[in-house]
Length: 482
Ligand SMILES: Nc1ncnc2c1ncn2[C@@H]1O[C@H](COP(=O)(O)OP(=O)(O)OP(=O)(O)O)[C@@H](O)[C@H]1O
Ligand SMILES: [Mg+2]
Image 1 (cartoon, helix red, strand yellow):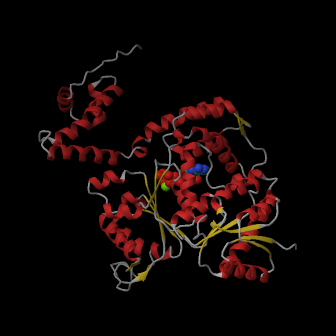
Image 2: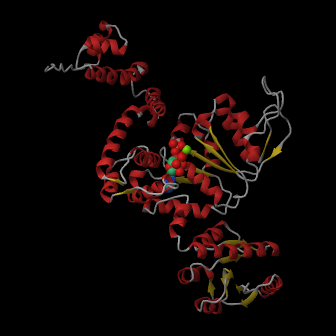
Image 3: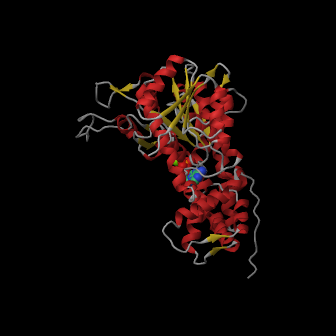
């Protein structure tokens, strides 16, 4: 095996000497220099397998040369060292494309481990270079749209940190995928990734599920149960649908995040916790705070870094890539693979995707499974889209969070009443809002036939008539032509 050469740019001669010694002893050839100009000379001549550089050098700042290096030698791993251990330095290093950032003082073994890892990883892409598609396939997040660039940039900055992240976005925009990527590519990747969905667990069990319980803590607690916090120790805890967390559990969670330790339900022993928290919600938490449904202090604890995922309709230029990606996933084990025509993709770009990427994924699944043709044409896509339009109407109450919409509306009305800007008839105002469209739409469905409509509504005919008058509903009688 050929000896690897490490370029070492460091102006502090003591550090340079120590690193030189450590790396040479480990079998590397080291080329030390105290200035950027010499280092740039080597790099531009194609020398070296890895570069270790300090940031502040007598003849300039390494961050200014790094873009040039990256452009010329994209596969040369760069390890950045700095005595300015601020978050900003880490961010700049990550933005400049550093493989790793090493705050000073550092441990010699750590440097060696990083160098070995970096060199081992460089070898991989050259093996699979001819399978460029595989790289894309293994990427967790597909899409190159402008709307996603900010998301990627934030993700890159977050990878080497433990900061709490709050992922927001409509349903199906990829919130869970982002949470997983933060874990898989971050420094906790070897630890566990534990997900918990607040909306999927009965409210009174959430605390026990999160923090665990001691044997005998409550009726039915026959054994000690370790909660998600304990299971996620050393890794990432993904708190999905955080807006659905009950108040008491919120209070307890806040305390854990502040103190870094917790007790189990029914327990007294303090347990230390080391977890990175990623939370997600499709709800408007600021609104929930104003309604008294979410703790403001917890919100600021969790929302250290907000990450907002764009809806698919704002990134339609990604649709072609996403379709390709899902087609490949769906047909992994199939020999003759179906292809989609470009005008079929154009048609997909015209759809507004209320269910976002999940809706697109499901559509591709149907296209592959239900149509025998080898080529997925515009006609097939048009047919499937018309089916999903019908589905949307049926799914209305589940895709639009009706309860959240109502809560928002009601809380606005309560505020109006409280400040006296509206008369006291809250009940009637809210009921009318629902009852009016309900009756009008049912009558419309029954073509103005009040007998049919009253049967459908389960209302007495006289009551229905009164309500029609109350809501001033105009009845358009449709005369049957047959
Ligand atoms: N950028 C992307 N590239 C490839 N697949 C994606 C991308 N974003 C999302 N997906 C896929 O779309 C589906 C929905 O994503 P995910 O479950 O992360 O959404 P979500 O925002 O958590 O939705 P919900 O609010 O309904 O829970 C998943 O199958 C996911 O793998
Ligand atoms: Mg989700």
